Length: 209
Image 1 (cartoon, one colour):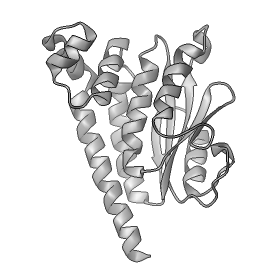
Image 2 (cartoon, rainbow, N blue to C red):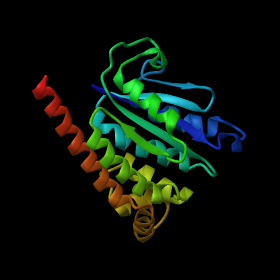
Image 3 (cartoon, rainbow, N blue to C red):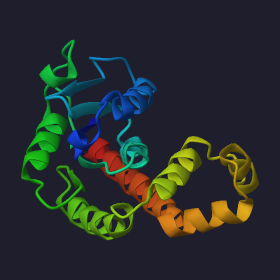
């Protein structure tokens, strides 16, 4: 069982130099595996990424969202698929399995959503996609400052607000305000619930098999 995230940079042509967003994303992706087996860009501004631990998929999606929205005018569409991996190719875009199919099919159908998930667990998908829709009401409206505070908070979970402020050159109070406006606490609760449910579903699948 694995997870695949298929993504597309929204309004990428608004940025004159693609490396402005591609560089930070590559740095993030490299923490998860090597190109092109674990991740790969295609069609210029689209990408596919494997997150081997499905429980981590939503946290990685949040990190991608925050990384991209830290750049003015940009956003990202993300389709998460969780399932089997039947064939591992030298390039991720040539690998196959349910996780790839779910992510790809979902991505192609996403017109108005920027974050969604597809698995074999129908009720799980229904519940999570409702949560994602609600979370997107806040995330899609993140300012650069909001996205920046989410990114650094996720990258440095052990730092206090004061320490985060020191890294950003702002006060602890400003950090608190930015996290609140970004819905950071609620995001962490959603990520924790996602992790719990995925672990439960995977355990149930293992018991049946």
